[in-house]
Amino acid sequence: MNLSTPAIQEQNQINEPGLIESQVDIPYAHEPTTTLDSLVQQGDAQVINELPPILKDDQQAIPAITAQAPLRAEKLSKKDCPQSVKLGSYIAHIHPLHEENSSVQALYVLEIPGLPEISQHLDLLIHASDLQNWQQRPIYLAEQINSQGCFIKYLALLGAENQVQAIPLMNGFTGQSQQHIAAIKEIHWEDLAENFTDFEALFYSYTQKATLIWTSENYIPFIPAQLFQTQKFIQFEESPADFKTPLLLLKDRQKIRVIHGQKRLRLARTESAYPYFLLERHHGVSWQLIQNIITQLKSPIDCYQLYEAIQKHISD
Image 1: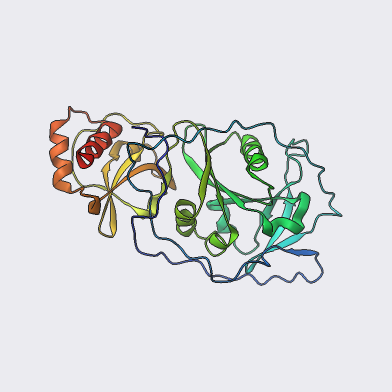
Image 2 (image 1 turned 180 degrees about the vertical axis):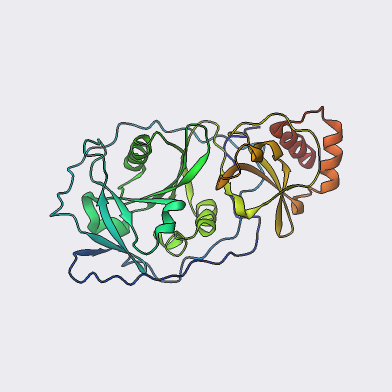
C-alpha cells in the first residue's frame, strides 16, 4: 500500500463554509489595467465540500517531475508592465520580486489592497511575459512547506504557459525563501475565482477541483486546523511524532475528529494546517471498530500502522 499520494475523488460531503465576499473599490482609471477574467462567468465557481477519501490498495504514487532550472524570459520593464490586473471583483497590484538578481524572470507578485489577510494563506504570482493570454491558461496551485515539512501557505501562479514552465518557476520562487513545494495542482480560474480569498474555500477548491500534476517524495496532503476537532476521542499511547507525521482523522457525520495525532498536535499549536489521512463513518469505519483494532496492536501505536490495520479490515 502506498501512503504517499492519496487520490483526490469527489466523496466525503461536509457543510458548505461561508465565503468572504468583501469588495475592493480602488480607483484605477489612470493606471493601465489588463482584464484577466473576461471569459469567466460570475457565480460559476462553487465550493465543493469534500475531503480526500481513503487510500485504495491499487493506487500508485504519481512520479515526481524533476524541477529544471527556471525558464528564462525577458523581464518586462516597469514601463511595459501594467500596474494592476483585474481578478474577478478585485483589483490586484503588480509588484516585481525583491530579488533583483533572481533567475526567475518575468515573475511578479500580485497584491490586493484592502485584503491583506489573503497573504496569511496564499501567495499570488503572475508570469507576465504574455498578460493578454492569461485567461486562456490554467492556474497552478501548490502547497508550500518549510524545511521541517510544516505547511506555510498555498501558492498560486497565473499566466504560465504549461506545467513544464510552471513547476520550475514555483520551485524557484519558494527556493528564494528556503521553502519547498509539497505538491502542485492545475485548476481553472472559474473554479478558483470565488474561493481564493478564504482559506477553507481555497482548500475545497484545491482538494476537489484541481488536478494533481506533481508531488514531492512521500507527499501527504494538508488540512486546515479549523476543520477538525483536536480533542482525541479514544485514549491510547501513541508512538513519537515529528512534523511530517500525519494526523489520522475520522469524518463522523458532519464532524471530523482525531483518531491518532495527539503527540503531533503538541509539537506546535500555531500551525494553520496539518498533514492527514481521512477515514469515513459511511465507509464502515466506526468508533467500536477502531477501538477493537487498537486493542490488537502493540503499544505504542504508530499512525501508519493503525491506518493500515483499519484499511485492511474494511477492505477484507
